[in-house]
Amino acid sequence: MKEKMAKVTRYFNEEPKVKKKAFKTKNKSTITYKVRNKPMRHHEIKQVKKIPNPAPKYPGRAPINEKLLEKHSRGEGIDKSGVRTGIHKRKQELKEKNFKFANEQAARVEILLTEGSGLLEADAGETTTQFTQKQIMDNVDISAATKHFELRLKDFGPYRMRYTRNGRHLLLGGKLGHVAGFDWITKKLHFEINVMESVHDICWLHIETMLAVAQKNWVYVYDNQGIELHCLKKLNKVSRMEFLPYHFLLATASDEGYLSWLDISIGQIVAQYNTKLGKLNMLTQNPNNAVLCVGGSKGVVTMWAPNTRDPLAKMLCHKTAMTALHVDPKGLYMATAAADRTLKIWDIRKLHGPMQVYELKSVASNVAFSQKNMLAIGMGNIVEVYKDCCETSAERAYLRHRLNNTIGNFHFCPYEDVLGVASAHGFTSLLVPGAGEPNFDAFEANPFQTKTQRQEAEVKALLEKIQPDLITLDPTKIAEVDIPTLQDKIEAKRKLLFLKPQKVSYEPRKKAKGKGGSVKMAQNKKIVQEESKREFVKKMKKIGTQIQKEKNNSQNKAKPPSVLDRFLPKEPSQKLKK
Image: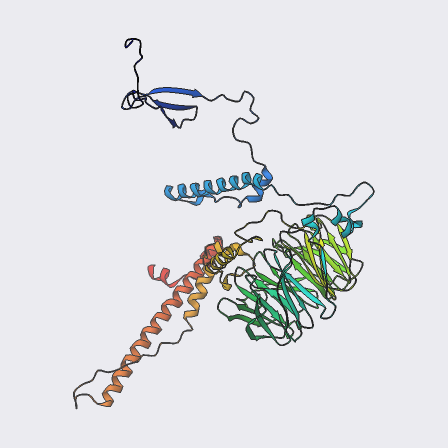
């Protein structure tokens, strides 16, 4: 019986089973797994080969679209023929290689931008101009349809409006003192006050918790609860305002013809100049270089910076008085309108010749560009939106909308297909498919940012603030090396000739009583002054001869040698040699 019984085993009597472990190793052609059967013994190696694609579409990586490469290109590379040493040449080659790699990566990553801009397409025999806002609302989703609304405010108009940089918040200001700010997407009201004075313009500052209001006499700064923070009495009788976000500058134009730049981070006036153009009603900024463009009654657009008292450039755009002016968000095109019912599109980088000229049905009082180069034109109580009107000539309007009262001003909402129109009796939000940029950079302007993200962005912007001295027409010149020319060097030395000798402060040492009198002290002082004057005269003579030599050498290098040079008077040094 005992022999038939099987041996009873317990779990602790069993022999230990060795668990197999797999380790992946990197190899281009194969994936190798090392299987460990027993510790501290030889490994059994199993190789699993990758099965190649029998008919690949591309032999290597997929090629990149040339248009995308041109879009992200930083220009031509540096000419390495002028680099002498091999170390610097290799550094330049490595830098160019990194630029090329970054360009390719940026072009490849564009496939991740899945959002596309909207568009209105008309059937055969129809045009998009005849589509009304009600028809557009009926054919879009609910969230987009809620973005079309109208505020009827008849008591305190006409109104002016402004969006924040991220397009989330809206600010309204009535001529008779009504100021309100709210989140126009959720319709949540931040504040609503009456300043009991006339309001000429409104402007958001670097964040949505601060705003500036140009009132009857001075400019006031409020927070998003309607509490007055500052009263800027140095900015009086302001008619138009612009905020430069990268420089933290509030630029203002007054009825007396003064342009002012206020640094809101330190609360000081950076510059204030008299333009001598009379009352300023048209003011806009070039987002590419932060230069202010001012339109005048003589049809001339002047461009201003805080570091020069005179305008950087002047453009004769129209023969008659200008009525509207705007620069697109990329800083490429400028639209101007005049009293002769003409509208001109300019390439603001070239400063010559209009790209397109349009004849309007009536005088345009407002113009505004969208992020996708759509142009809105306000004429009386009619708003017309044109598409692709900068590089090519637009035959008809893309959209048209008629209001019940005259237009105050309007702006396209960033990152939204919305045009906000402020009028004499309120505000209207219009749907314009394809107007906004669908893909936003959250580090630049985030419509969905939280409170902590806003605070971090504010601190980062303050740390990266650009000084007002760097505002120029061509912002790429800042990265160039400032090499003075020979003429500049000669002029700098010539200025030294007109310097006056420094006054010598002679203090004689104290001597014992009776050793040195006042006469002796005066004589010593006179001797020291004469010696310093003599040295100064010698130095001036030396600089003068050096300037003359450099000037003669530059002239001799410029002129080719001639046979008649033998008859020229010889220099005194050559006469002595003979």
